[in-house]
Image (cartoon, rainbow, N blue to C red; front, side, top):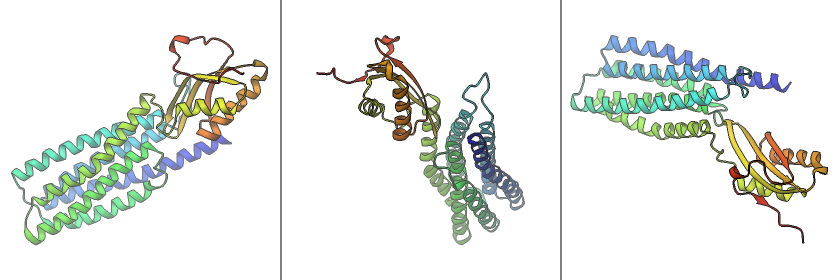
Length: 306
């Protein structure tokens, strides 16, 4: 039952990505044709931007789809990390796009190009509507889905780009001052760059098996020692994320009496789940010296009785 529920949840999570992919890819073709028809280099360049975003959405959708594949002998944890890898690639891709736009903006400031404000305004307005629909499709549930957050980042960049293009087209139509186009493009990409850096850092942290930011290992040690009378010490505590929403843990627990083994083990798992949201933990129970003492980090222990 739980497996079926998770499967349907994952399918529901990938469907908006596919819908946004088809929507963005279709408009990319329209924008490119519109740029050729109007002779607007700005629209052709923005179509190239949307091509990058279409590829990013395709990568995010493929990552979400692959994550549904079950575990096998070669990948005992399954394919959950594919989504994190896709988010990392998307974040890096957006940072490269920021650099490219900066270079292109500098070139256009040095050598302004002719831009037809009317066609640019019409296509930019359509682009804004398309991006609003795509953002609405991706909005729900992206807070804890790093892969979808990276996709939202790209769509948000397109949406702000459309707003900037509308503003630039208005200025060009009213004044004929074309440098407004590259200046607004740089402003928009700088707004998004900070979020791109955050996605890259979070993805890299997960791939490097970093401790989840909301997990306090010292607090875990103290809570287990205080909650369970038979527990005298905690060491070799390792916590990492399989995905942004699933934490894994291993730890060694020193107990005073093995006679209460089952109750202690059950209490450890219950405490970890209720207090820290960790539902998958591997616990090694010990009564004496740790089998791997040289690798043990500082531990929390209870003072001896009396």
